[in-house]
Amino acid sequence: MKDFAWLLIVLLLSVGQIESVLAAPALPSGAEPRFPKPVEEYHDEQIPGIAAKLVRRIQVEPFNLVGTLIFLGAIIHTFVASKFMLIAHRLEHQYDALEEQEKDTPDDQELSRMRDRLQFRAQVFHFFGEVEAVFGIWLIPLALAILVMQGWSTLTSYAASIDPAEPIFVVVVMAMASSKPVLRFAEACLAKVASLGGSSIAAWWLAILTVGPLLGSFITEPAAMTICALLLRQKFYDLRPSFPLRYATLALLFVNISVGGSLSHFAAPPIVMVATRWDWGLPFMLTNFGWKAVLGILVANTIYYLRFRRELAGLRPKPGQGESERRSIPNRIIVVHLLFIAWVVLVAHYPILVVLGFLFFLAFVEATRRYQVGTSLRGPLLVGFFLLALVIHGRIEQWWIEPVLSSLSEWPLMIGAMLLTALNDNAAITYLASLVPGFSDSLKYAVVAGAVAGGGLTVIANAPNPAGQSILVSRFGDEGISAVKLFLWAILPTVIMGAAFMLL
Image (cartoon, rainbow, N blue to C red; front, side, top):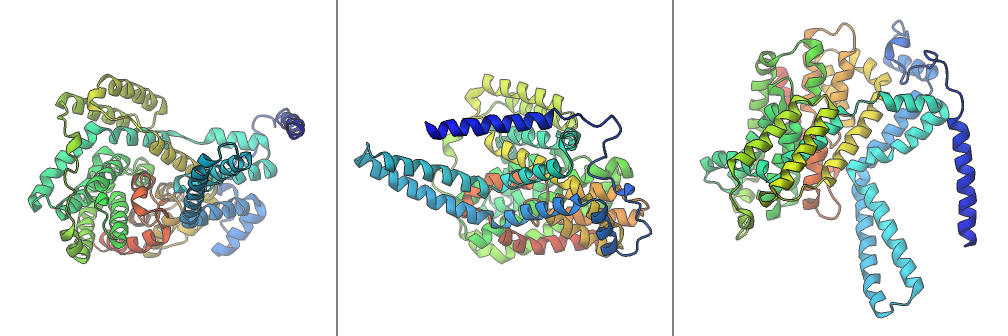
């Protein structure tokens, strides 16, 4: 009771301090500095060399260094997230052991408290091990840094300036695309392709990794990622292939989805960011990116197929796999689901209309629940959390990304954009590139080619990747998906895609 009283006193004092901060008078309208500081306000065009320019920008705005160090910490965290997950699983095993022990001594209060502490610690480490939660966790030190160095009004104005349209769209389209009718429709379409190879596991593997990503140019990349990942989990990962083949497949999925959306100008986030600004339409995308993306996907898939052909040939579907849910779904229900997805794609930049469409979709799912499975929002919400956090972090990094990109010629720019994409969302890279004045057509092409080709190197490289990560992570054991192994297996298809875009 005494501890509770002290806790209450500290809480009341803290609330008083917070109220005094919030009650502080705001700066007059127009007097607040813009945050993050726009690159054109540095006025450092005459400073030679990137290093000197970056040092000058840190001197002008010290928060640049702080924000980037926090962002670097989040990136490092993603590479060690699997270690946190291992600790969480170990604590969960200890918790289970104590639970069994407590059955014999139900009145042991000390044992009960130990179990509660273990459960809490396990959940904390599990949260720190969720790749989708990493950038959200690092929003806490970022917000504190902004509050201390820039003030409350800057923090709130920056939060208000964030556009949540893309995260909301991804959450909704991921939930819709993972519905049973849509998945059954996609499976039927890909089954036609797989039948050309005798409907073997290898034929399904090739069909999903070849045709599935190309669908992203029409139903958007997040929807294609969700459908392909769900089908791969059902048709391939549930057969427990070797870990090298698991990582090779995941790398191909991420890279192919990233380039598979380049046949059109409205489906891939990094292309959407620049299409209107640079006047890139459907004919331009098909002739400059589309056919090269198709060729690159075919080459990469063929190489990995030849590498693992014996293992793929040895995989056999489990007896009765998928037979429990073979109830026929009326075509009218499938059509309505596809229309809902079409609506969300059409109004993707209007969050209110997206949310309203989703609410009507949930009502329709409930009305036709005989042909549905429960709509799970945990995965989509985690992915949305990841993307929103990445947008908040990413906008602060423009102070160094812009001069780096603007100083490069075609090939270095393409490679630089590819490598930067591994450390940031590729849509952020192309968006910042669109702000660079004087970009020639060849440089515009190079930066988009690099950003699109590099979209599979890490989970954070392309907006739909977290969706695939959340769907497939359980098939990679207790340690989850290793960022290092994913990166290594993604290097070859990334190089193939980059060469296809730049040499053909």
